[in-house]
Each structure stands twice: as C-alpha cells, then as structure tokens.
Image (cartoon, rainbow, N blue to C red; front, side, top):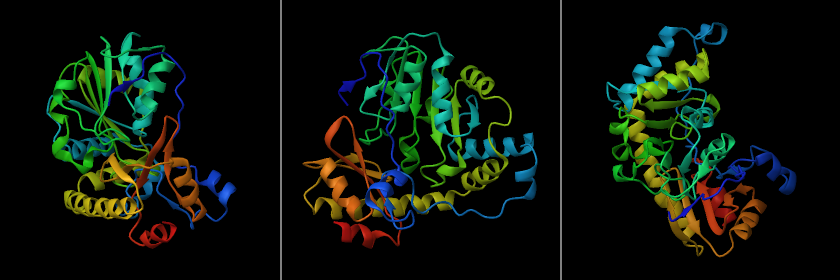
Length: 319
C-alpha cells in the first residue's frame, strides 16, 4: 500500500461485472457464464415473500427504525454513533466529499476507485498525508489489507468496511462515534444481494445528519427495508456463511496457485493473484465463459470471486 493518488485527475471508474460485453465478444448466455469478477457472495441470503405494502406504500418510519435497530445490534454500534441507511454504499460515497470544505485528501492506492472519483468531482486535491481528509478501504479492495486505528490521522476519516463482515473482529466500529468519523457498510457483498441497493453510513452524528439531508426522504425502498432487517437479525446465517466462505477461499487458492499463480492478497469474498500476464489469463478463462477481474494499473493482478457451490466444475474445466 505504498502508492497514492497524488494529483487531481479523472479517475477511471472500472468495476467488475460487464457480462453483456463479455457475451458480445465470446458468445454464450448470461446463465452459462460464471461471473467471478465481483466480490459478491455467490450464495446469497434467502429472499422470502415481501409484505404487500413493501411494494405499494411509501416506506414508513417504523420499517426504517426496525432496520436501523437491527443494524445497530448486528454491528455492535456505539450508542453515541448515528446510523443512516441509503440506496447502496456508492450513493453515500458520492456525497461524502460535500460534508467538508474542499481541501486535500489522502486515498492510499490501489483501492476502490469510486472514492477518488467522488472527491475529484468536488474538486478536492490528492496528497499523501493530506491534512483534511483520508479514506481507508478496510479490508482493502483488491489487496485485502487491514488498517489500524493508528492510520486514522485526518479530521475527516472515511473507513469503507464494505467487505469487513467476513472478519467482524477487525471492524473499527468502536471508532464510529468520534468526531469526523464515518464507517461505511455494504449489504450487497457479504449477503450477496447487490441488487437490493442497500448501504449504511455509521459515525459522527453531525456528519450523519448532513448525509441524511443530502439523501432526502424515503431513500431506501420498502423491499430493501424488509430484507435488510431480516438479514441483519440472523446472526446464525452470518456465522455459517463466514465459515463456508473461508473454506471456499482456501479451495480457490489451491486451484489457481496449482496453475502457476501466486496469492497476492484478497479476502474470503475475493482473492487477488499475481500472474505473468493478467490479460492473457482473462482471455483464456473467458473462452470457457468464466469472467475475471483485471486492473488498468497492473499487468499482473488477477482478482477472482468465489464460485457458487454448483459452479466449481466449470472453473476447473476452464483451468
């Protein structure tokens, strides 16, 4: 984690996904492709029937408060910290730079590029050890690096814990109530329900109040409120999922490293490998309709998510 964004520039906003483009080039159908380009849990939280009024009524205060209570308990949020639910962590990331006067921000790279794009859009300047703000993705995407409280060095600290539910003991949630702190949580990754578009900002009540004003009323849909409350109230599912993901991550490492790759990092939701030619690996896997993630800043980084239980054979055949 030695490189940093050091100058104002338009940051490429590359992401995983893009199966439609892969199909256009290599053929096949969406159902036939094994998408390992994201860090989304391939075995999602089970979706049950929704109450009829989740679809037909404006989300009411009772449903919103139930979701926030479940979130506070699940993440062990300090009583003095505030919580805001939003339509995805990305929606929060886009608005956070407006919480403070434009200044200098430190975003250690490589990391999730939406943070730099959001600060650049608000004319912030990038610098190492910036005096005004710092963004840490914890654990980092794609390296899997975990930060420590000693790294919380700026007045405005954004700690993106979108992948931290695989290791709750490493969470910095105890820092959430301190002035200038914002911790982000994603519902789409660990629970495998990215389409629900649900994320959370937890932190300094003054900052969370500002974010709430930016988001406006009814930011979270009725179905997402219902689903999020159920999932965050199910710690047994979470514990079982962590154990399964850890086993699957080890299995994936064994398969990929047997083909000459070297483990370079990652989390139990995605793995990062060093290979001789990442673009060539992506090409060869795509010929078997397996989609992977490569990065514009590295010729050797290959990131793979985990296959669902019934799709390991497809990856093995592709290798």
